[in-house]
Length: 442
Image (cartoon, rainbow, N blue to C red; front, side):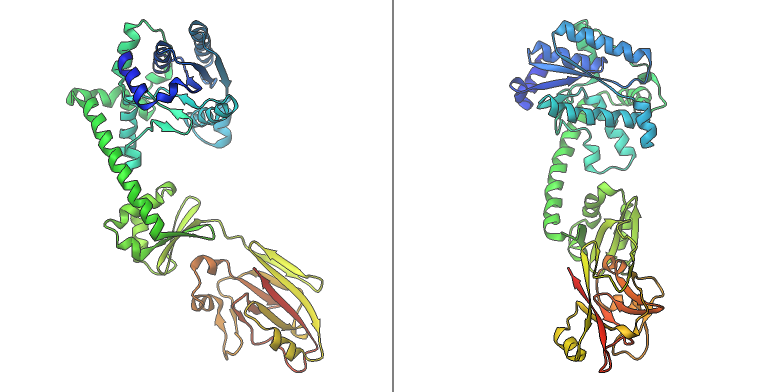
């Protein structure tokens, strides 16, 4: 195995011979063998051990074993300690997930602090097969089925092409000692159940499983690369980001060979039910589906991906002393004006971003708020009243902008759909003596 490993490093990781590297060492067989292989190649590396303090004396025994090993190999050792149980409780996640997060967060930090260019972990081909089966059972796409990456930021996995059997044989032949983690024998965890109960049956039924799986994985990775190129092309031509939200062009999506496949790739990070997302393509305007903190909205000719909780209710009082109101991207500038000829003033200064209100017709304070279903006003020039929801639909703005629309009220009267329509009842006349001028500043 040493010769094959050396050849693999020379071809795929030649930088290991000239850069600063560290090995994540648990004391288990896989990471211990990895450290010995690198030592045999006379590479310059240090060791990192994570003590998660989950198995009492066993955890301390692992640390002691690694300390002795580091001394024997004459390698510098960094020991990291974690209160894993407390972190799992605080974050409301499993112990396994907490340990994984702590481990990789710590690797990122120590890589920067100690200037390691690569941190090596000991995942191998059997880990890859287990991951493939887990992701297959979860309905993963190509990215899930291609499994563990050889490189991911600081992390490198040089043992991925090698099987557990090869690692076992190397350890036995070279009389390498290691520590057994008692939790690895428990089948209450899915990965262990696959390892102990399922994969041995697959090996019995398919004697050439490892070699064939390795070939299949290579084919899948090639397909994944081609898929990524195609999806990137569609992102360039068929999507755009507007106000931080992703907009997907429905017409261009439907012109692709497999719209559902493209949609899956565009949305895979957000865990939407892909069948529900596909149905949105032909649904009525405004139809929405949600996944966690995200939502997908059909808005005429686009699907809009946005945060589900990105709409904050607005309720602001405006009194005689208020000169400006700022809400996110919009500022309202407020002036109190007295003039002998206010009609001429209004005519000369009118624009779609301004509202002029006869002060004598107002009940103070004015209220600026998010519109509500059932809100109704009589727009200027219209005989009857109309629902705000209908006015927003008529304005042909996006569903997300409709939800964020603001209204200005005086007492029980709605006097302005901000930036869109003003009320009939608070207009300026020849008898008007003072006005409030409100200007939208974007």
